[in-house]
Amino acid sequence: MSSSAIAPARADASASERDIHVQFRDVNHVYPARAGHEAVHALGPIDLALQRGEFLSIIGPSGCGKTTLLEVLAGLVTPTSGAVEIDGRAVQGAVPDGVGVVFQEDASFPWLTVADNIAFSLKRAGMEKAEIATRVDYAIGLMGLTRFRKAYPSQLSGGMRQRVCIARTLVTRPKLILLDEPFGALDQQTRLIMGEELLKLWRETGATVMLITHSLDEAALLADHVAVMSARPGHFIEVIATGWPRDRDSRLASTPEFGALTSRLWALLRDESIKAMGPT
Image (cartoon, rainbow, N blue to C red; front, side, top):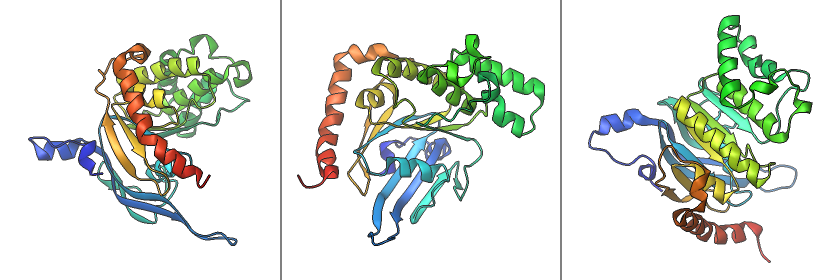
């Protein structure tokens, strides 16, 4: 897949280049052999250019390297070969400035209130109290947590705790938000509501978003583009533009166009999922 699938050519090539936020160039990752097990080519080759302000969902069979891809972009895994750039700068060995990461696991601190959880990283950075208060108030309001700012995680539902984790990422004002199955433990109805909260966050902040998900409905509803990965070693077999308006919400799920899109995604994914399961 060429990078033009996500960063289409424009009349002003230099402007198009300036709009590219994330670039993967021929990225591969191989986990080395150990303890009698063979090396595993987990990912690649990956070529991808992600536009600034884009919302990209990535789907693929289990074990295809989706999380590895996100961890490479986050600077948590160094690829075996190839290059990854954010704003034209190489990603090397640490989470880059301006990048926020949210994983599926509940990462809230049980001994801190909602407000203190959200403020935690800002306090560690030595930010002034007034600025912390402003940012925390904004994030709490945006994520619908105003009534629970003094509550502890044990007093919240799973969905609310995940909103706390997203808010804690939001207050750092990341330009790039990476989400690895953030709603995976939630029921379908709550996932739809959380998806709408995420879209609201995306619209209000203008951030670039990359979402890893196993849910075809979630991928189709939230994204500008859906990238479908192959069985391991994972590479992109197709990137599909959804064509949705920016102010979309979960009502899209009842339209014929939505059904057609999810059917297309499953048609692409079915054979790859069977391959990933191995011989039957």
